[in-house]
Length: 466
Ligand code: NAD
Image (tube, rainbow, N blue to C red; front, top):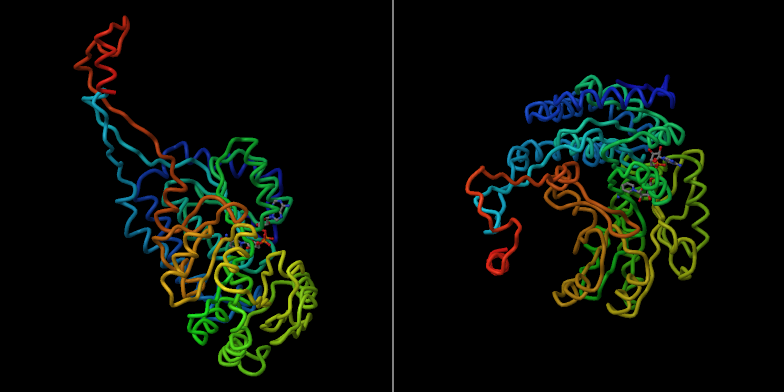
């Protein structure tokens, strides 16, 4: 069941789409592990067989370099599917738990069952990964899924709407294209789970809509992910890893390094290392490099251009609106209250802010909203411990950027304004599963102990064995 780009699903049709999936869910068809595995294998085949169509769509939408697009959108999800296929049987096995004496003889188990019909809403920046990876979790857990790609990455949305139905059970999976109106029509329906990735403003709309049906949500949001570069860090390696994480997908990554807090004495050397990294990666004219992406649309180019005035662009600073190009940029001398230090940048602009030692850096981070990711570059164990225990974030990478998401056994998600809930690997399976508590007893024995009339002796025994 698909609404294509040429004929988006009209709001009134959305109820029929959801109702049809619910019939499938109630039939029990999605419960067997074999059915779930077939769906995941189908999505995997789609990614392998249709790779060139998918990469072409990503190139149209975001000018994604081929290797980057494969690694972060296509290959990423293939690895996720392989990981889930490898472990699904053991994750789905009921988990036996201890039963206290007063309940015995009895068997207590946690049975993971699907919620029912799930809604997955994706953004545009990794438009394949961020739609298909949550679908993998939802299907692995035995749910039906309505998948809503982002209209902002229009070519990829159209490609997914065309391709997904060719590879999965269309009675259980529907791709619904569209923008605000279509998403709000979907949100008015009763789903059993809503999984949203995108900005916090819409996250609030999603949560409010889900609240009307008391539907549980996962919100994968964004924010400003800080980087701390401490005195003992290897500056050359730190700069390369930060520049890579920042300028990948032209900075349009939810866990991209947003700004750098660097020990004051190192600022200039650090910026020179970033300059070298940018040159090594993209040459003297990044605009001409086939390895540097583009901004998704003109409105975002204008937004980013507006941020350039918030500091002194010591690297980059060039903008070509017609080509949706914003150069890899470093801003220095940025006032603390500038917009570029308040809002998530979501583009290739890196403010570098000098701080007076590690305590000042930790204080700075704690003065801001809890981030999705925090990056620390240091060779010191005590600094690492100080930052890990003194800050809260969705995730942390030490002496690296972004790679925390490439470990499927690590849950990925935010905390506070950067999101709630987590996914990837087992966390995805658990997110999309209801943990049903099951206690099983036989008819005998059936002692009087728990029944009225309560006597002093019964109370004594209860106090001892409960
Ligand atoms: P977007 O504009 O594509 O919006 C996301 C989804 O919400 C889309 O499917 C869109 O159709 C829908 N939507 C937009 N406005 C809506 C409305 N008023 N009502 C209902 N639905 C609506 O993407 P975006 O929000 O610009 O994405 C960028 C943001 O997402 C950044 O803040 C980024 O940090 C965050 N993000 C988070 C993650 C993560 O995994 N935590 C990943 C990527 C992006």
